[in-house]
Amino acid sequence: MIQRKVLKNGMVVIFKQRKNGVVSVAFAVRHGGLNEFEKNKGISHFIEHMLYKGTPTRNTQQISTEIEKNGGELNGFTSEQITSFWCKMPSKHLPIALDVLADMVKNPLFDGKEANKERQVIFEEMKMYQDTPRLCVLDKIKALLYKGDFAIPIIGTIKSMNSIDSAKLREFFERIYTPENMILAVVGDADFDELCKFAEKNFKSKKGKIEMPKVILSNGESIEKRKGIDQANVVFAYHAPLPKDEKNYVAQVLSVLMAGGMSSRLFSEIREKRNLAYAVKGNTEGEIDYAYNQIYIGTTAENVQKVKSLILEEFEKVSKSLDEKELNQVKEQIIGNYILSMEDSHNILLNLLISEIRGDANEIDKFVDKIKSVKLKDVRELASSVKKGYSFFALVPE
Image (cartoon, rainbow, N blue to C red; front, side, top):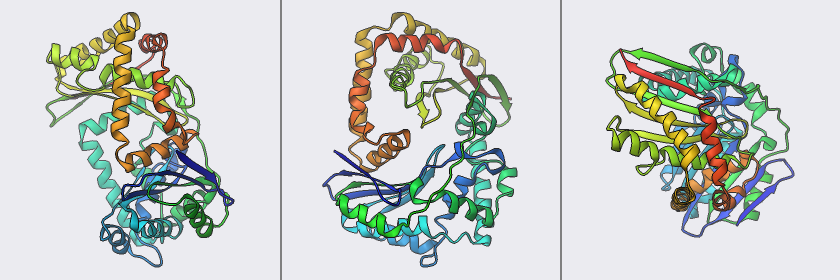
């Protein structure tokens, strides 16, 4: 059972009990890359980095030491509509986890010298994405699926990052990191009432405004050449129903059917039958205001168009010949994978946060029933619609 409460200060506390000696804790804010305009693109991710750089009572080393020397793990992430700071540790150290994370999200220093140094770290992170073909093409496909501010990668651009100083970081932080925009999520051996008391005591009520640039859908195709690579990296993607739409579960089923593992249609067709690729992987992306499915394939330059044709042909086959037997097999695969993932308290924590951001933390307890309820005709219809609007990008050897 999931317990959820909106506190007087506006913060949402969500909790799932697990008595296994481990606790996963996260403070998250409802703000990410999608909430940024071009001139400030990357500021959410920059703030995430800076919250590990010290508070008035803890320096960077002390933040990590208090968690890690007590057997814990500490990390964070920035996505399109959420920024989260989390740790996982023995449940007897829950008070330490809460104290350290709360200090981080309440009292960051935003020292100017540290901000300038961390900016250089982020520039190196940009180079890593650019120099890693498989990561690079995922940013490229998003830029074909959307126009405007949302098309820019979460990490931002060199121009936008150079325009963000410590004063701007603090201004954004003060406006965004308020209790009414924040979530405390805990999975493990804890007491829900005590968690709520902690959040009420340590966070004073304060409102904060979150911006929302318009999400502009698009589609396009592009092939780029690059020296120094031997493999063509291909991504095929298409828009999916938004998470608030019940048919988003249809998109999840279709994604697994097409490229979810070695038994999937495209893995069987492209790798096993034709030996055209090694990697054939698919996934569904989406939070509140966007959703798309993407398929990644690593192949040779001469086979790029062949691979694209095979993808489209397979969607056409699904739209006409998918039957209940195969659909039920895919549903069982998704449900089984979900159950396996829920062995880990951290995976439960992430699912809770994503479900809360999408509108209802309790969705994780409804997931199995939602997948079971997906209808054959809806999967066929979504597969049929793909040929009418998709995006395709390939990074190939020069």
